[in-house]
Image 1: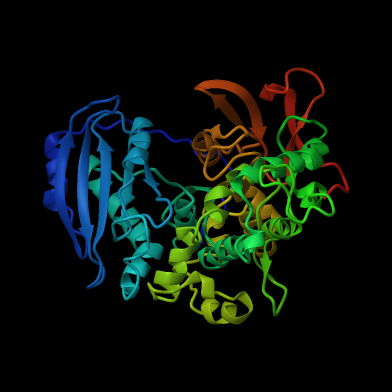
Image 2: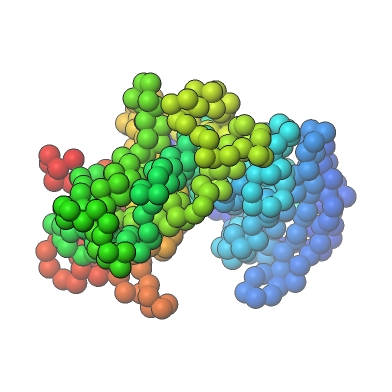
Length: 499
């Protein structure tokens, strides 16, 4: 086993000058098991992209596999590195936008459809091999075979390999760090939906909380009032009232503060400023998350105060959100006719939870094999995310610390929270940032990210910048200067005793 790298890695690489013959040679000479190279062609420079060799592969590691993968390799200006890009939700397509972004940065890049097409999980019922392909096999084989294609094309393999992904791509990132620690030298995992089985329970219970009875339904028109009350309670906890809850972990907001006054059993439907008693209880459940009724163990955490404008997709539909609903129907229960209205947590949790496995939910906290070879893992998460509850990656981070120790974690893993940011972006807070450059500097120069600059824009114009801070630090105002400029903030631990 290699010892952790203590010094900076200086990447020196002379850009390759490749030709169309080199691209054709990949198809003629690359031999990988159970794989067909369906095409290797040069794509002309266009739309700001350089000319590149596009290699398309079909992988069949099992009799029921049909994994499509593409590798894009710039003809000139290659930076000597490889970047594999992840997929959201249930994957099901090559991520062309992310491939273009990687190519623009000089990377040779790859993406896979993970073995099926489409955004749902209908493909999974009755196809255990396809579940394995989606779960981890397609990602790993894409990494292995892409590096071989790169070596065939350029005559030398990549000096460093990166993985980047958000949501479902964050789950893929965790699979790679846990299962295949030698595949990548650095991994960027945004809003990692790694605990998919328990997350599905969370989606189910959030939907059930607001559909338990007709009285527990919360009209989306009331979300702004809940949001205003949450900000009123917790916005200033970091010492600054700026429309964002920065110190979320210190926030203890009770929606009862906006319960309709006593005696108004049936308030005016036009009054969107208060909640009925059943609606207050529903909101409390949404914040609290959900526990195993037998053991009291947290199954999946809830929403965080400040996320209320993002709730609609999770709580407002006639059925639970499909990214959770489909996990039950097609992957765990394998019953397309399953009715979510029949779900009962106390009765069904043990039975359904036994069907979960690491193909679905990569939650092994032992990252020592990845860290020991110099691997760097940068995780980012929006505090206002309605899909991946923000405390989910925090719970994983804490488990990693307990497993491999704080020193190893400090050397190899960073967790950044973005206040007011939704799922992989969006939201009221600064939500656009370049985490990949921070990861590159960490892995290649030994410069651990002390903060990441984030921006918020309205109508295409930047109107606020802030530093994102590594957990457990938060951004705090220096006391002077514009609250919309990052230079007037610093990263520091929250005030003692507030959490």
